[in-house]
Length: 390
Ligand SMILES: Cc1ncc(COP(=O)(O)O)c(C=O)c1O
Image (cartoon, rainbow, N blue to C red; front, side):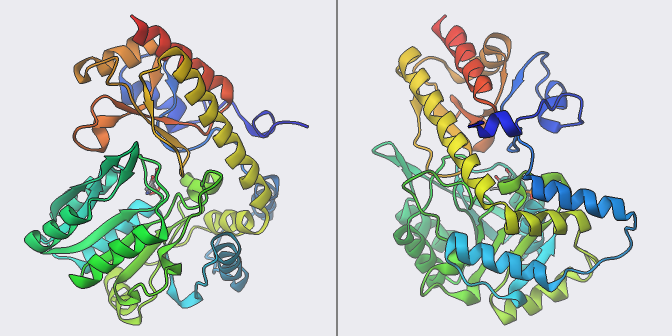
C-alpha cells in the first residue's frame, strides 16, 4: 500500500509558497528547512482538484452564487464529522478566519473595550485586539501535570476587573495542541454568560484530532448561550486551501446576525470566492478518507518526532498533541531564549515558529509543523540534536 505522504507530498520550491519560498525573507537566513507557517506540503484530494480543473476548463468566471448543495455539504460535514446541526441561516462568508475575527471585534466591541485571549495563542489574535485599538487582556493557560489548562479563577477575575466584552477562544488550541473537553467548554461559556461576554470560538483546527480525543464544537454544546456565541471556521486548514480565501462565520442568534449584516454591508459586498466555494464543497463531499489518512500521517510524524527527541535529547519536553498538526516543544533544558535564533537557524537549520511569537514565558519553545513528509521530521530532529548537544 502506498503511504499517504508518498502519494500526496509535493516539492513546493519555486511555487510562490510562503512557507518554502518566503522563508529566507521571513527568517533572514539561507538554507532553512521550513516547518513554520501552518499549511501542508500535501496535495488536496483528487476529486477536489478535478472539480477545480473542470471549472477552469469551463472558462467563464463571472459573478457566481453559492448553490444549495454547498450549504448541504457544510451541514453534512458538521453533522457527520462533529455531530453538530447547523442551519443555513447562521452562515456568513468571509475571505479568511483572521479577517472574520477582525470584523467580529469591530462589529461587536468598541475602541478601548477589553477583549480577552488565552495565552500562549496563535499570534494574530494579539493583532486582532491591538490593531483594532481594543484593550488586550490575556489569561495565561497553566500547565498541570504536563497538560495546558484554563485558569478559570484568573479568567473570571480579569473579566470582572477589566469589564471584558469578548473572548476569542481557540478550539482546538494553537499552539498548545489541546482539544478542550465538554466540561472545559461548559465552564468557559458559563463564565462568559455570567458576565455577558461575547464568546467567539475559532474552530479552524476542528478536523485535526489525535486518536482518543473528540472535538466538540461550541455549536453543539448543550445549554450554551446562542445569544452570545459566534463560531468561525473554514475548510482551508483541513484541506490545505488557505490561498483560496474562503471561510465561514456561524451566527446562531438572530439579533447578532442582524447587527453583523448591518455592519458588514459597508465593508464587503461580495464575500465569496468561486474556487474557494468549489474546493470547500468538494472537500466536504469527498475528502473524508483523505483527511483520515492525513490525520494518521500527522499522528505518525508526531510519534516519530517525540520518540526520536526522547532518545536523543531526553530533557526536551514535547507536549501531548491532542489536536492541530502543530507540535509544541520546550527546549529550556538545553538553551536560553537569547540563543534561540542563532541555534535554530545557524546550527539546526530549521525555520520554526518561535515560542515568543505566541506570548510571554515561552521564549525557549518552538512550534513544529508536522504536515509534511516524515523525512523532513527526521531532518529536523537530526538538526536539533546536532545544534543542542553542543
Ligand atoms: C487558530 C487559527 N485561526 C486562523 C488561522 C488562519 O486562518 P485564515 O488563513 O483563514 O485567516 C490559523 C492559521 O494557522 C489558525 O491557527
